Image (cartoon, rainbow, N blue to C red):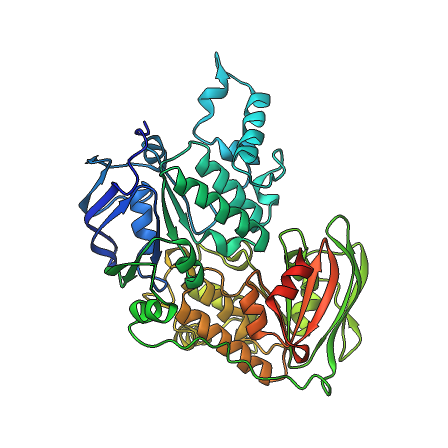
Length: 506
């Protein structure tokens, strides 16, 4: 059971010489750390540095190969997440962690339903009331409780996972890249919640690639590289440049590789007219021009992510039309979008972008299958293999080879596979939804450079993002949505003001 609240600043959790390997890959190597009650401890590092694996061992998801752990000065050896939870440790994992075919309520109390059962009969009403109370107690916006998890957005799923982690009132809360899924308003709620938990003497282990967020939230920061601890330092007095040097071992310049688009002469490549989707989007109209980056931003209920699905033909709108300007052709299906030269990288990469149990090769070639078919109608294994190996090299995907399964990759390398599969095609329009979600500063810089290069080729890009600095740094124009409608379009020539954009959002 959870111990009594530890004295503030006392060591509540300690790991000694922790190591974990997956086959020949050494994910965590002899890491020793201590974590204190009443602190927010940040963990940073490049993708594949061992952050998630280390936290997964603490949370009982992975067993360690060697080393020891102590909690409240007693040996701590969780054999499962439920066992860790019983000892006061909860984790929200980086990738989505809900069971799609269970309801929100059932997901929150998964493995803890005994409290709602009497003589073998489950009191579903009582369980639902407890779920409703959990959202209210923690000040988190409630999502529909009776729907299946598979119907939720990425952001809603993360809110449910957060409530589930908090439902046992843990004294150690591990958050792995949670804010990467959140829009501005839910981030604000989370930050306020973490301040309250810290004041209560809780330990928060906070994994993030957002270095400004790490510096503003955390008390201490641990840097990992290639599975090893580089250093632990106080957040006060540290800088983003210093953290980047420690993470990658070299200078990483903060740049979005922005180059101005000639919008006064650019022809429209896509015309969106009066798109309406019941309860989600209302009369959305705009034009995308050749060689521009049009940023789409808004709060959690703004509809920006749903609009991306509509533009790619994944969701059929109730009203309105999407026109490919070059031919006047109407984009009204997924097949039509692909044939026209529209590519889409979704926010939910594991569910919507990748076949995670398939190989890297299978994922990379899927959108370009037609190009590997010979004169007799058969697919060429040699061409497939050569193409996949080339993308592995160009996008610097860290893997044992193209036959490795995608679910064995880190989050950042999965994102590289998702991007490579679409960006290797001859596209005319790119729809990128949160392309840098959960990736490190090095990969992020490469993605921004790639966006700039593609833009110079005359391709129109729609960049959907919850990261306001990303929108400001990459976009020629920024379209802000509110409650499913276009609230305002900002022009770079006018000067992008973060304050003004946030004011329109809220």
